[in-house]
Image 1 (cartoon, rainbow, N blue to C red):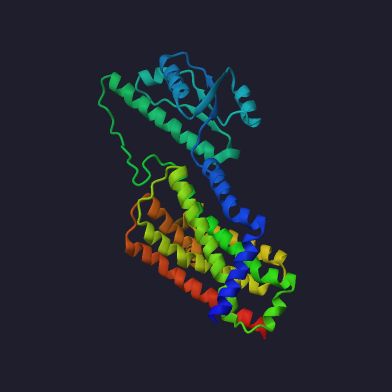
Image 2: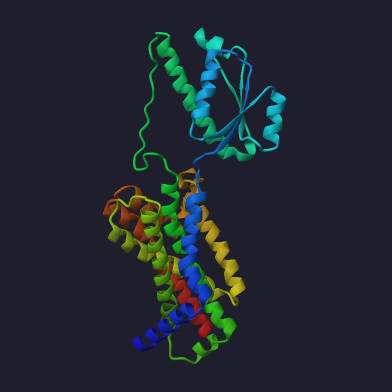
Amino acid sequence: MNERLLAAIRKEILLFLRDPKSRAMLLMLPVLQVIIFGLAATLDVNNVELAIVNRDSGKWSREFIHRLDAARFVASATHLQSSAELAELIETRQVLLGLVFPADFSRDLAAGSPASVQVLIDGRRANAGQVTASYLGSIAADLGVELDTRQGGAQPPRVESRNWFNTNLNYRWFMVPNLSATMSMMIALLITALSISRERELGTFDQLLVSPSSPLEIILSKTIPAVLAGGVVGMLIVVVAVFGFGIPFRGNFWLFAAAMLPFVFSVVGVGLVISSLVKTQQQAILGLFFTLMPFMLISGFATPVENMPQWLQYVAQISPLKHFLLIVQGSFLKSIPPQDVWSNTWPLFIIAAVTFSSATFFVSRRLQ
């Protein structure tokens, strides 16, 4: 059995390495996607185009605008004469949002009365608009505190926020580590989902019917190369995240590597189930996307699992990515303790056991 299994594993690895496209998919594609996602996929807002209609000729509206011009997130601020011009710029997507200062803005501030600024946001870019509006709120709050101090009044209480683990709320520190899990999952799923279906299309699957290999040996010969590929991709992205993007890795590397093994095994099991059920590579690709997107959506990669309905939070437990992302985020942004690693690792063993048993059952039926 050992000789047959080693020969089958060697055959799978050689088939993969001899294909230039497969080699590029394993090494170049993950690194390229990490660079693109790391630089492009961010919720931080920069280079914002603003438009300002200032109907006030007083000091404090000019001070507010001066602080806007000096803000790091503002690319340019266009000064307009009317609200109609502002509406046109927002409608044509030339600016993200506009500010309208009323004529009594400075007078109300000087008198200690409530003063307001109208902010018009392009709702087609809702997330960027809301983030920018929060930036404007911070500028307004700072101006209000300074004004109250200058006028000799008691300084109002000020909330001082301190962010743990990700001090500057750098979204890249959240996105890039998560890619070590998602890209590893995508590669492992792709390789295994195409393995048996490719054998069927090439006609080599019929040779397994007359070979002495057992269903378990066939499953293992497809599993081990995919596990190696998924692990290599995951570790490669970790290296890019730490040395390329400067993201700190504060956890135990060996605990992280040990947890990645059952994660990749559980993902490979899902891919083998897909591959054993379909007949062509095209069907395998469709099954891959049918599985991959729900796994990502319910994993907490883009939105918190806690925000989902209760029944969907239960469904999310079957996603290997959901459990491993908690380990990834804890390993990068804080030193996650071993007991927390284990609490998110043992579900991966259960998922792997169920999927491998199912794949072995389906392959056994095909070989009979």
